[in-house]
Length: 481
Ligand code: FAD
Image (cartoon, rainbow, N blue to C red; front, side, top):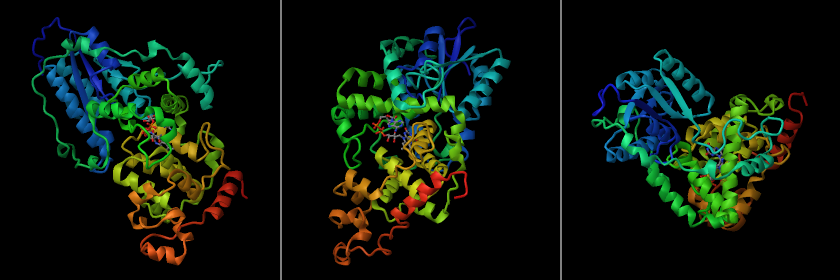
């Protein structure tokens, strides 16, 4: 395919978009635009990733909508987005040949599969005499930029955070001024844009989420959050309150820039903003664990916890997945996940703890289920969150600290507002009964039109009894009790 206005002297580079679907403050794009006459934006729907997904997947829909927005912006700049539906290991070298490009620029992705893919793409490009140039973009500090004085990774969050904040300065937060160089975007004839159906997908229902795709959607959410950030530390733990930012999916797909968010939190400086910045640092803490210890994808960070002999009862696991455990806070949370693709952080901790320490199911089963359902699924954060809750991870919850789901419910959804939203069959229950309907007397249940075992399940396990079993399981791991 020819570029309008290119001659044999024109230097041409591809910019390969992946989890950075925006046209501002974009490291790879900035460098390519500065260094080349003509820059061609490309995106590959990776068939090796898409093929195993169910035909309705919120992530694919979010990416699709965000690419539409990116394409519109590129067209306004008289360029376009070149899209392929293929394996990038062959597609990227083909695009290089097609556009007679002499380099490929992209932002680094630290997940083991992505590293393998990029190594293969780089090798294929090398055969064409082409370089794959990669840049830091999705984190403030990557790889081994934050290490201890003995050059090893931090395995405890607090000193990691201290070192992260000590190293932080304006240099790391500066924005890459892409707009200044947009005239180096190649002028391209209109490019086809595949429909979801052409990619073998159907709409999955983003409408259930209070989240709009693309940079416009991300900026709108961020503006809204700025009005609430001062109260973040007070509100963030209550799922019925609009406390958190809901920006995780935008961070996952790079429709917003981490530098923009971190710079805002750092400069704003209120207690709420500082607490929020800490959460952004947790994200990087888990990224560095994955980078330094990629075995965590399949194993416990603390390897001796691989010996835990979980019961792995499939019936209990299915009840958990479906939000039918008989514990209202757990069920409401799982139904939120199933219906919207999002789950509040406090509820991720409660449901993960419940699966592992009440149902005695391997944390990897839950991790996989979340990975399928979460619109913001991120390997490092999901793995880190699950290993934290399961006490198998780095700086994790000690194994003897076991969430009581009823206490958590009473504390963080005291009037049952969140439970009522997702468990409408319990909505007429009042007071303590909404948190533990099996403890309510018959008259209370009858007045609320609830028959346990008919309208809503009896609890599938007894928390006190399971707690003892979990303690024994963790204490005697690897040994016959
Ligand atoms: P906010 O409270 O507004 O936080 C701002 C940002 O900080 C988030 O968008 C996220 O990028 C980051 N962040 C916040 N809390 C954490 C945390 N505990 N660990 C790492 N980063 C954090 N987060 C994901 O992005 N993807 C996942 O797949 C994921 N899986 C999780 C699984 C479990 C079992 C647990 C306990 C946590 C998981 N988290 C995951 C972390 C956290 O729950 C979500 O990031 C958060 O709920 C997203 O909502 P928010 O954007 O409104 O967060």
